[in-house]
Image (cartoon, rainbow, N blue to C red; front, top):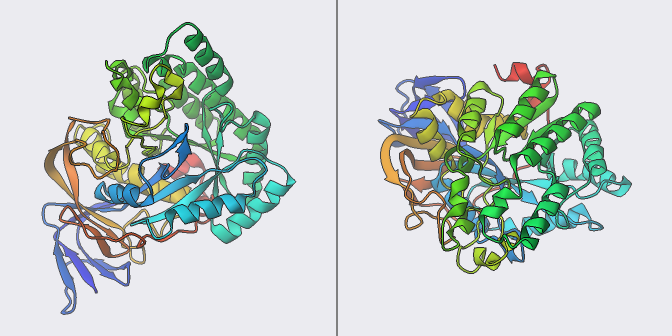
Length: 472
């Protein structure tokens, strides 16, 4: 049915204006004043902003890790994402040496099929690079529309790839039109520090942070940037947590290297002291990279404001405190890494960023939606409000005050890392391709309604622009 959203303030990455919005066949068909139609459902957005649906470029749903599997799957995870104002996610498809990429992708399709309530795509992990993998990558891009590859520089003995693999992936991506993503930490040094800590009897959750110091993130980020420049390729650094890494990205961008940076809400509002909570409560905050000393938050906010970091992902990777996180009692290295973060990503950035004057309203839209759409081949179908774009829309009340709690969140996990945090601003209604998923803060969507999205190659949106010019 045709819908008209009236009386709202439309906000994109570049503009803020009052207008009505008409939706037909899942797309925005008109934007203007005093739109009307006898056969349209009228939706009153008075007092609210209308944002393009959020795009979360970094999720791990139904993912095996550390001897267990993440608590949120594609149904509960995407439902929570929708409550939080996200209408598209890009999840990480894990692979393994000697196994075809196609079979790994099929596994992820089986995990998501008939479950997702919003649209989704996949990034593809690269653990080895040889002629067989290279040949299959070209097919994957054409048939699956997967145009981003993830290389881990950490988690030795699990996911970590060597520098040769990273460099070969960068070279291949340049030719194939794909964006390489890195988890940038020096896994070899971390492995040594973890073994040393355990040998000395240091087993509490805080040692997760102390054995992954910011220097190892900064070093790996700088190394990945150097290899990207050498390959004349393109790089996206996920979950930047500290000044050392943010500075390496800024330096590389100033040298003309095609590099982009993502941070996450947890690094903007939480700090390393949370891992010191008694009674093993610190395990709730174990993820990688770890939380940092509080002063890093100002550096990250400033990097978002100045455009040296461009996106915010959730790094959703949820494990129950009871029954999963406690696998690491007596040995911090066995605590499953990750947290339940998908639902509060958008609201935290608005409340802590826009409301407190750290970023503008238009920057907020760019960081939560538009930039990711452009980098990952979704724009302009997604990531903006324009005639012809998918009607992925968030009606957002900027004045609602609420307290984040596991008692009221919609993730399947038994705790919330932002427990007790008071924030202002909340999605009221969320539409995916013109259909309500959340209506007046109630779930009205259905599992399986989300579509798998094939994405365009990297650079298609940027053909005549340098990274610096794109930020303008």
